[in-house]
Image (cartoon, rainbow, N blue to C red; front, side):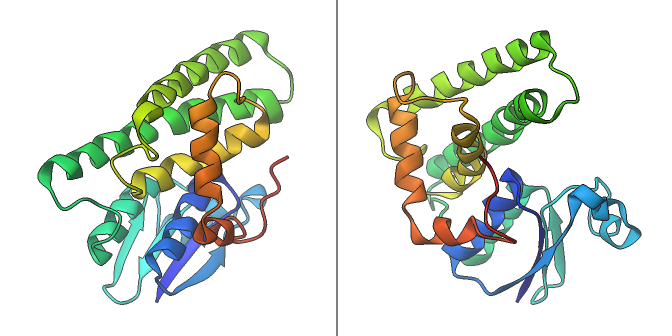
Length: 207
């Protein structure tokens, strides 16, 4: 059994979707980030950076934080959704890092300044919007001759989906500019494990 500490947020969805895809048993430990539960000492003992998600693998005693690190851990634990070849493995790892270093941070900043900042700052919205669209363009090109970001469905798609789902709901993408990316999004969201993962710890409230 795996304990999943999470909230309804893009990085949290990555792992609830993954656990469903991997077919692993897990128990949800909801972290109310709006009330600051991530700063409580018991949570900081799991992740000193005070961010969800975190997993505790009760079978191995291993605690893992950082969503992409969790994805790698689960792939290694199960032997699923990660290519066996060296070339394929490193293809997955580099696109996983692309998500962690670029897609997540930039869309996170864009979402903050578009929807949650106490005042509208045009410079910030323009800056992060331009960078988001540059990144969307990279993924659009990547998907030119493939159904998934790597050669087959993998933890890379799970990692990117959490944030692209958010971007689509936020209206940051459109089918005319990024038809392949939208098709990829729709292909992923049709998977039963993804549908279930988006209800953890409660149904998505992104509108």
